[in-house]
Image (cartoon, rainbow, N blue to C red):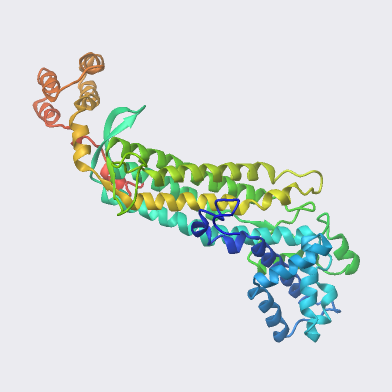
Length: 456
């Protein structure tokens, strides 16, 4: 398979963008995670004094087991795939592979019967996928999202004082600043990112139906829940004490929802930035040799924001299906969850593409202050909000209605508004302040917000 022959664009056209996820979520990555889970369980059993037939491994034996996991490569994955051709069972192939490697080491060879001891396949699979999802979140998605948030934060600070005409319902509205509008997305994304990071991913190693049946049949006096908790803790995971054959994936569903929520915020940002480019508020840096249109030479299209919107939408379609499907099983278990879980990496891949597209788009943006000022100057009517609000303060009746008659559906000039203000019965200092008001100075505390305040 090459980038030109790959079925999925994640492994084809966009392979370079998503390569950080390949070692984690590929079939080889899944095999490695399964092997890590099997080795962790075997070592945990050897440390349990209630299992005298499996004494604690020597440092050399532990080092050899660690080496098997740490040096796992494509050749090892292919060896497992060869075993699977006979077993027709992917987890059993992992067990046979590990047993085979232990044959060359006398101490490990003596422990071969304790590989996969008392476990069901799902004890290995749920741990493996939890390790993979954690690695994908912590090692790839969150750093990419952090970089994107940082870029947005920089834009918010740099353009904190740059006035801009706001748009509500697509129509001119009270002015704001470029930085404040970007700050809103920064704040939303930081909350979403923190929620993603805070989700604890649980796992289980409690046997075929979650009761440690085989465990207690072999060793009735061992505290199996405590042992399983220790093994999982050694992998950095939290035990779910009550499950069926499967860990019910509620935490994974929560994570999928959390990632989808962050993606939705980014789709919102991508659409707004696209709109600001269309209005001329932002320009885009060009690159030598780049083409914007096959027929219109002048075009500089906002392709990064469009690509981000599309890929984030694909990510969310997968994430929402994962979140809705995975917590549901037929009785103890059916294979539909296993089939669906194989697509977690694709969901993360499309999200990563979206994050990187947005980062590229942000790096190209330039603020067009001349266009911003031109638009503000052309919409003096936005100051009617300030005038009618001040009129209310001083008890002047029909301020809203009179200004609506003056401005709604017509072009209002600065002279029109000044003439209206001059006739008002207001204290001189208040009238002077209103007469000096202009759209580019009517921005409230937008600059303060853009710089990260006020906190309350």
